[in-house]
Image 1 (cartoon, rainbow, N blue to C red):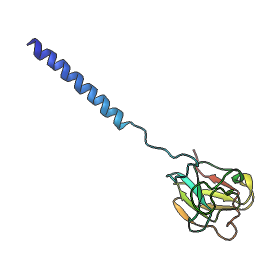
Image 2 (tube, rainbow, N blue to C red; image 1 turned 120 degrees about the vertical axis):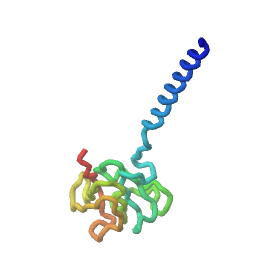
Image 3 (spheres, rainbow, N blue to C red; image 1 turned 180 degrees about the vertical axis):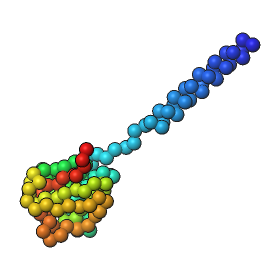
Image 4 (cartoon, rainbow, N blue to C red; image 1 turned 90 degrees about the vertical axis):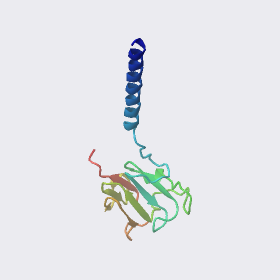
Amino acid sequence: MKNTAALRRTLRTVVALGALGAGALVTAAPATAANKDGHLDYHEFSLNFQDSQAGSFTDFLYDESLLSNDRFITAGDGRGQIVDNNAESYFNFDNVTWYVYTGSYHGGVEGWIPAEHWGDFSTGFTNQVSSIYDNDAN
């Protein structure tokens, strides 16, 4: 009888610890995007050195008022070049609209890239983009 009670306590402890462990697995945080790490993750925007998303690119998670401070970071043509006035294509891998500007600090001509859209810049924006803005209301 004494052994049965001890066995029950041990089993309850094992079950409780197992439930805690399972809860920890369920609540583990998902991987998040990292700004300018050379990996285009969901909720990021990229600017590419060449058209058709070719050449080197850099990825952005946040607004960037001065693209003259950024460089293309991935392998390919244009790696190491300044992003300002050097981008020919884009990829909006986000669920919000991103805005592009021909001037720093969101000045100059404004264009917009819809959510989850990619392509080549039009004539007025090819090698003319100097700042970008994420239209996330949060």
